[in-house]
Image 1 (spheres, rainbow, N blue to C red):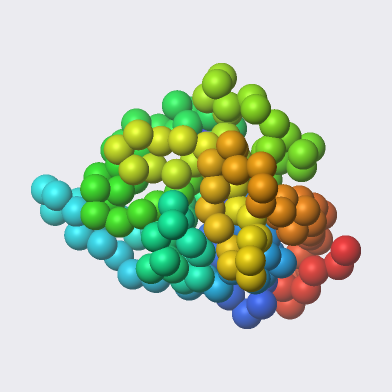
Image 2 (image 1 turned 90 degrees about the horizontal axis):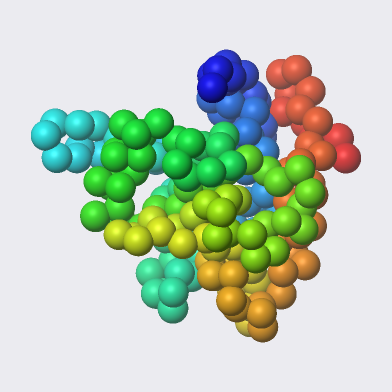
Length: 179
């Protein structure tokens, strides 16, 4: 598998390391998710340093109302396609903090809600010892990170935000989105 070179991209005055990270920032903005890009490096076991891509500061996870979770952007469609050393860092970090992996923005937005996860496909994946597919949703004024079995949550906001992220056209230096 050949590696794709990341293209630094400006969005709302922040230079993201890749276009995909900027697209996820668009998604967060459309969902009303507050975030900090590259919040701080963390010292893991054996002197390994790890810098998560995002800290999301207003998301409810599994009923935990602390309101924050870290997010790592990986341009992969399968968790197993992420290089082993990168997965090992993420899983070591997950021993201390909540983290999700964000894959590619789906080509067909509705796919992130279909039950196709048994093949290892993911759009978002929560890591906590065991990993499971999940999605962002709005419910009772809050933003939730849910498993695919939460049918009572409103997925329309997430679908809309994914569409905006997918269609975002970043102009050269201004970081403007044209939809």
